[in-house]
Length: 577
Image (cartoon, rainbow, N blue to C red; front, side, top):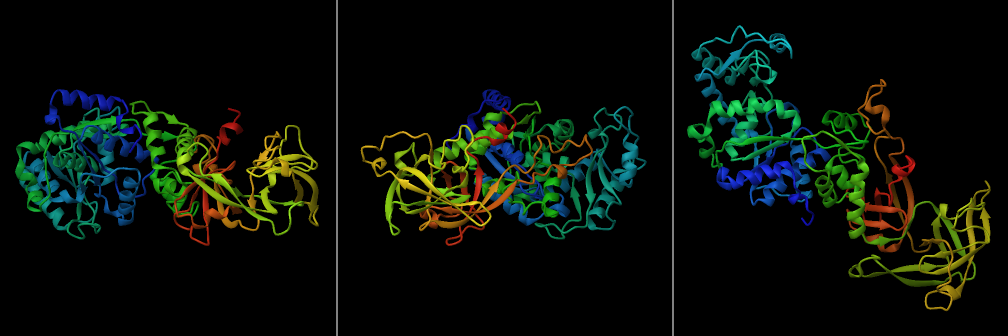
């Protein structure tokens, strides 16, 4: 990775520097990225990925990929595989691949310790009753009537919960903390619930599953995580994170992790520190997993990897380079202040990356026939063009030129408006790399629409001729009609047409703000050198934008290109910025 994402200065990096200077954890740095495999990763996850892996990389530490698979009803192996692929595509690799389910026996032993220490109890209240007993932000809660069960009774009931004797929702294991706490997360939170659902890794071995707040801190401690980085919504959960670690005290109770040692899993028990940062929000975007899943489920997009989706798989298919996403989050920074970043900033990072890396090609997406009348019908020659105007190391390519060409329809105007400097009846324009042509005639179809323009080529303006430097105001691109290849070209744009699709103050939902022009499909003509383009090949169609060969549908003989981004920010222009 050549970008500066790993070395960006932020308050978390400063914490790590200070703790290393104090030799905390022996100067060791360990982080983790812990997604729940219940959906595809999106741009917001990319911020956490870049931060966790970047901190570990900068300080020579470790970063694990750990799947928080404690809710099997919503999880799927499809999501597991997509997450692994996305992390690697983004430019990172994990030190170890772990699962919360690797630690199920450890979680259970830790829960038994809490029960023996009088810090947890089995509760028979229903979910609705628990909410009733919990109180409000201004009123304390009430103790469960089952809070004072004996240690022996709690251990017996907890063992029977594990054995499957009770129905889903019949009982929970709750921490015994403080029902009058000003932090509702400390009002005897649930640690375990009964869910008789098969698990993707453990099958039917378990019918009780730990809650996230409980499992997460133990997982961090077992893996030797030093800095547990999470978003701001977990700030109020930090006291519970610290309470669990303090009460369980894994460093002084190695017997609790013995099941991992027996299974051959590496442990490096530590006392991690949770640090919160602001999540990444973008305008013109929704990143709620629930809403993204609804878009897929209801057929409003063509799957999780639809190029209009903010998922990493969608952005990859759209042609966003991973370096651009890393640079975007480096520029956005890491703070404790929630804010919304303009999508145009991300698009700007994409343009920068592709401008340097994408070779140039000719393509016409709205074709109009141009006939050079003073060339013979069988005229054919080969012209040489640079693959990149700013980088000679890209080399050159050969482009076929013939009497009949395709040009963009918008490059001709029969009745020109003021300021139009391209082809008009009787006017001249330079054909890129060829010379100056003059429009002498116009053909129309039965409906009166222009179907072809006839021109003459000024031979004195061709390369190497005396008039080659003669100036005209317009230059247009072209492809040879005889040699061009037909392609399906998908013109993608933003999925939503308002800055904040989540704003429902006007009674509308995000569905009401879907952009009807977020995808148009056209039949374009491409220069022949693209006939063998590999899937995911990025190019700039000169004057049109950056495009990529679709990673799913593109094939030799059936080219499919997706527009990644336009050459300029058309949304800012439309808004008058």
